[in-house]
Image (cartoon, rainbow, N blue to C red; front, top):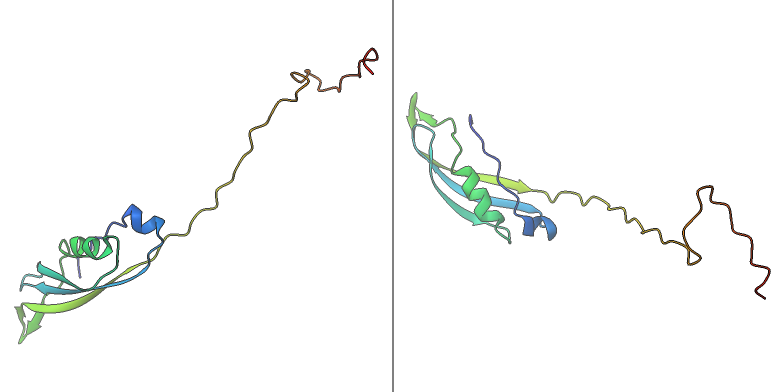
Length: 116
């Protein structure tokens, strides 16, 4: 194989964490150009379609018989692995104390002696 295009991983399949193999039947002409792709075993959420689109752009070394290039049908498996979900950090919004803004030196205020 001398030119390989990686398939797109649709956003819906990423968020659904779909993983697995797509199996394609691929017809290759004697120059190594892919001219027909069909999905033998697919995956949901467009992964089979994306694998087929990518493989249609491939160029492969053609098969030979008696040193002559010939067309052939091959089976290609494209593996999709769901990316790991990054852990998101949740930050709480700091709330101001109900007694008003903090002072510059953050000293606690003395209680008001007149209030009891």
